[in-house]
Image (tube, rainbow, N blue to C red):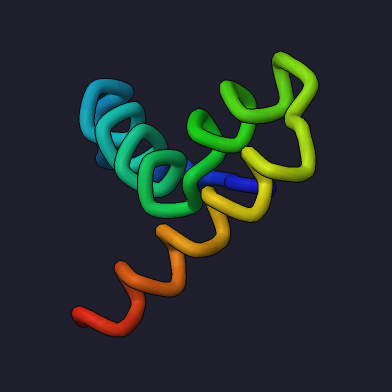
Length: 58
């Protein structure tokens, strides 16, 4: 779970930016999009294959 603590002298805008950055790094929105619809075994295999290819490039 992503959590951001707002500092005493920190504006809400900067805390919101930090929160959005943490959410995008965690991949939460991508996971929500993926879980929104049923994924067939073939689609799951292709997705994992793409993830492996991406991780090899890095």
